[in-house]
Image (cartoon, rainbow, N blue to C red; front, side, top):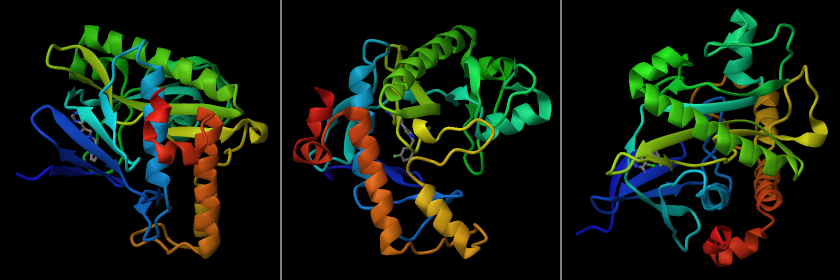
Length: 286
Ligand code: Q0Z
């Protein structure tokens, strides 16, 4: 009997079944930019994301239980409880960026939240808002309002997920802000366990699921540099690449600089040395 059966591929992650109740989530070193996976990997990127997720799962258990069962010695694989995933992406926004900014500019609203007039790109919102989206199989997730999300998960579950997602965002954003990083927004995924209880799944507060901005470079009215991918984006822009598959190979200095940004984000946010994490991944859970 094989140790694990491959059951799914994401752009940069792989999912395996360990048995009926457990999955193995493996974060690769692949990187995507402008929605295209590049041919060059960023060494240890998957380990940084796995370590950050583990760190956050351990620190938010008192808010909501999560799917994490164990971190493997490879530092990139998470054994997790198999859940019945909810069919919505649970996005929380504390700042106006990405599709939130686009929707606000077009309608003055984001997912049915009417916002004050005159906000500028990247501006902090009066309070964080829950902005669910559909899970697109291909293409982009579509922002939906409360009524559309209630159709998908029911009213009581919606209210529970909204309150939980907001509480998780507030906790992580406050922690990050104290360490010089603005957590502009984040995408969480929840599932239900075999008794119908809400459980946090997937990844949590990684640079792939969130916008991290260096606080000292934050300027409302412009697009802040992404903490992790800015070198990659700037390099790709400098080539005049048309942002369709295949993407360009990255030169060594872009790879090295980007790896350093990921490791820096890990160490800033966790207060743990990355080498200590590699020596024993469980240090992030302590
Ligand atoms: C996560 C995904 C990936 C492809 C399903 N604990 C869970 N229980 C049930 N399902 C999932 C989880 Cl995390 C689940 N995804 C997203 C991850 C590769 C797709 F690594 N899909």
